[in-house]
Amino acid sequence: MPKVLIADNLSHLAAQVFAERGLETDTRIGLDAEALTAAAGDYDGIAVRSATKLTAAALAAGSKGALRVVGRAGIGVDNIDVEAATAHGIVVMNTPYGNAVTTAEHAIAMMFALARELPAADRSTQAGKWEKSGFMGVELTAKVLGIIGCGNIGSIVADRAQGLKMRVIAYDPFLSQDRADDLGVEKVELDTLLARADFITLHVPLTEQTAGILDAAALAKCKRGVRVVNCARGGLVVESDLKAALGSGQVGGAALDVFEVEPARDNPLFGTPNLVCTPHLGAATAEAQEKVAVQIAEQMSDYLMSGAVTNAINMPSLSAEDAKRLGPYMKLVEQMGSFAGQLTQSGLESVVIEYEGAVAELNCRPLTQAALTGLLRPMLASVNMVNAPVLARQRDIEFSEIKHDRDSPYQTLVRLTVTTERQSRSVAGTLFGGDKPRLVEIKGIQMEAQLSPHMLYLTNEDRPGFIGALGNLLGDAGINIATFHLGRNERGGDAIALIDVDEALPPSLLEKVRALPHVIQAVPLTF
Image (tube, rainbow, N blue to C red):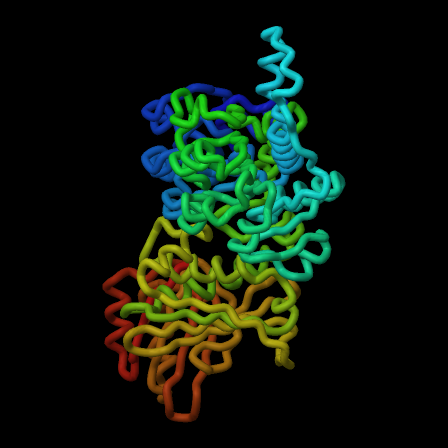
């Protein structure tokens, strides 16, 4: 039974979902870094919110044990070392949709608070001042709202703002014109947005490209009196530049739910006029916390029980239905990769995986990663589908995936071509009976072979008597041959043999095989 550590305050529904799906859970909240590192390897999965930090050390320790997946109940994964998780083959999941509505609503609420100066008016009124003329707000109707980042949350903000009769413009390099038309927003460049917007709201992740996107230079391009809302990530707005712009009146007001350093107990912005602050409440509703807790529990359970991958940061998505459908193909391509990897004796340079027939219509990205896993495993014992692409790139191994829409002699066919410093080698395979992997071609030579735990691969000169000599040698050594697959490129040329034996050949016997006349190569294989 897979076991999951719930390391943060998640809704009780998370543990309920895990139990219903057949997983065991431990709830241990508030573990320090040392305790978490010590415990990580005892669990197949770890579920967190934002408080617990999953460091490289904890993930490395977990990978030496059972840890296979970590899940963040929420969007941001700043508290998880994704690079380290990937390197150690651990899937990182989040829940990008669970709190989208809640965060979007908070951004709208912050806009209202800015427009009508609600926090300051509340403090004044409760102090008995009744300063009715001191809080002259503005309407949102007909104002231009500039949205930086029009993805899940930004698109919901756009929809709500249109309901308020605002005019919405959006800057997002990944926003297509068709999608912008569907949302009813005007797609613009960043400088255009800065110049036209009355209100600016940010809904992008914190990356090298977005860090400090609203700095002094950007704020200077805005309309005087622009109002800024940030419910996304601290660091998108340069706080010192914002403080100066608020002081000069270039920015008429700012509403921040996130800060460069959190918890923000002593921030230089605090006390600045026309500033509204909340303590990272974007996802803080009962509904959102229940949604993300249930979603992360479902996603982690699906992965641990069926191999389904949903909302992973470092691995392609794979539905439970796809996982079941792709199962036989996964076995086929991993065996093909392993076959090529065990025969590779010099540095790998490139890998090409080609799909044709029925398999080309499926989700092939997981298959490509499975093939890479099989290929690299003879050299890297810790490789799996998560870290295989990373390990390949680290070693300057180029890999590509090609789908062919063409007639094939087989209903489905996968071809793996590996190029090393010395040569190129290809192997092709298919499924017989819908789920039985078979090799059908090796180095351009037609051959039908089923792979088994112990095999011997031979390349030899096509000469009479070779098969008999090999059979006698193996028979005298008490090695039984289960199947014997042969092929050649031409009469008298090179031939290959793939032999299924009941047990592994001892090194001394393998040397005798290599010493037989006409043997070019003899390699033991395991699958």
